[in-house]
Image (tube, rainbow, N blue to C red; front, side, top):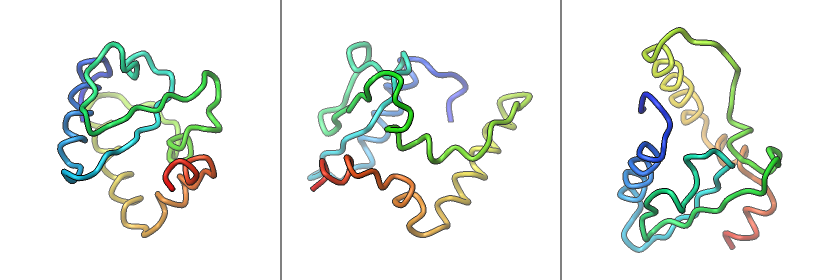
Length: 111
């Protein structure tokens, strides 16, 4: 968990994520229009392909189905704690993430 969002944070996330992918695997990552998601302003590892969504189409963004609530948190540590609790809870539910991301267009491009 990084304390801010920016191109450098995205680069670090992509590098760490790419390092976790098996050597013979290439992954696609769906991105919304956040400024730090622009592949032209950062470094994309060779085993990743960034797939930008069209503007103003939150219904196409799989992560929009994961957000559990909108809360105002007072500081960095409460944000980290809330994220860790939510991640732990959702990963314990076998098949939950896959069901939330079951968009027909994603199934078509992964087959």
